[in-house]
Length: 393
Image (cartoon, rainbow, N blue to C red; front, side):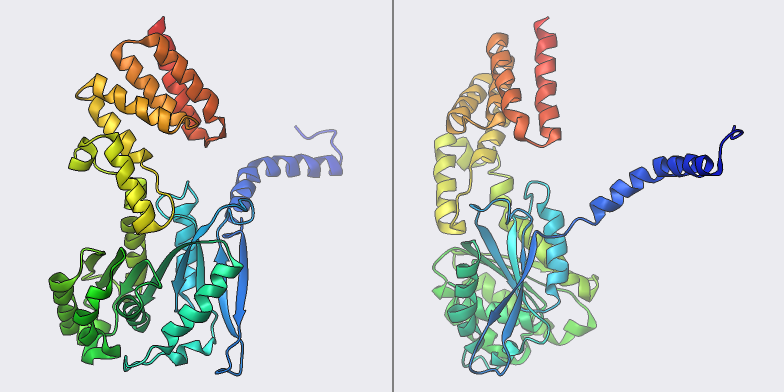
């Protein structure tokens, strides 16, 4: 096979074959080596109480540089190592269309940042929360494109810090993810203040708190029972709170679990929409639009679309009344005329009604408008057009 080939030709032959064999692996490795975020920055603040600058790691989402009009959620955690699991999980859970984690700006203190010395463990004063309110948050909002919605997560004492923010300065953050907080012996005044301050939470706030049953949490178990009982008895309607008991789970896994569940719960209104059988959905499209306007203004502070809820209602009605479903999708298309799926579902309802001409017309529009979507969306929409064409024949 190799007769007549020079040494250079032989080497070239095997190199070419080897390259063909490893090419898929080169592509895979190149994908794995893509930067996890668009940009990493350091925010430096100066405070006369410290001899050194106060440095914070700021992780910007992938789209930050490409989409210079977009504004983002601000997620803060006070543990210097929290950025490792926050940024990794954030990238994984947001890269496929921000589902379920909306792209966010993640901020943590750099190792060695001494600002934690401001924390008053007695709970009598709040200098660290004051620093967040007066210096850190304004600096983040000024330097980066935030959208006004803020999350704080915390593990152990940092979870206590997050609870202190919730009951002392609930305006600082919109959502609180708290894992295994230190609460025993009324640490930081949380247990004593909780029943008194819960009523001060006037705006919509979300809390998920969790713990396990590890040896590191044994001394807090009674305090956890007291904390949970107080929430159950006194939490206002404005506080959407959730509890998770992670019995049997590994201690260092707990904050990761809490953040993941917290993200899913927090953004569920955005991604899943109202259940189509709920009283609200059954009230119709106008009621859904009004509900999501309320969520936009009172819960999130940025626009939340009712599109998913309207779609769910229309698909549900397809199994009961094609005419009612059609009316839902007519309204959906008028609300979102540039959305390929509005045309796609309207075409589907025309098809169920037996109007193949209109079904084909709207599905062709859906295909035309889907060119900017990810390939699997385009394929799904084209498949329905192919099915309609077969039906036409």
